[in-house]
Length: 133
Image (cartoon, rainbow, N blue to C red):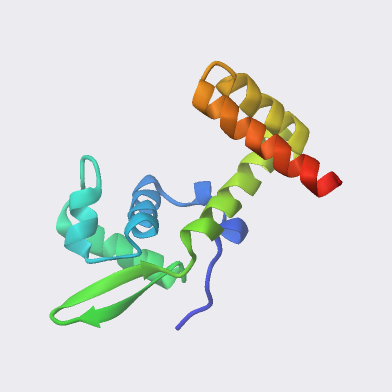
């Protein structure tokens, strides 16, 4: 098999919309057939287009497949958590000048009106306080 291609090295937004949709399905489900993937996509392309895109993603080293009886089961070669971290690093670098402070300030501004999110932000603050101690 080819080398694993990380979203951090490739850039999440370097993938086409359909490639990202397929990757998102695989991150959520861990494994899926082409039919499962097609059914999970909003406004899905044809079955053959899904299969072609899966082939492209496999050639890029992003996904792999195993035979599951008469069907292939596809899975991402990167975990959902790894993908989250890669995408977040990209967003922080591209949109916030690699500033965690600016990123956190924006998150606080966006979620300051939502009580549940305020609690989550306070919990993060508590964790950071414990790490400093």
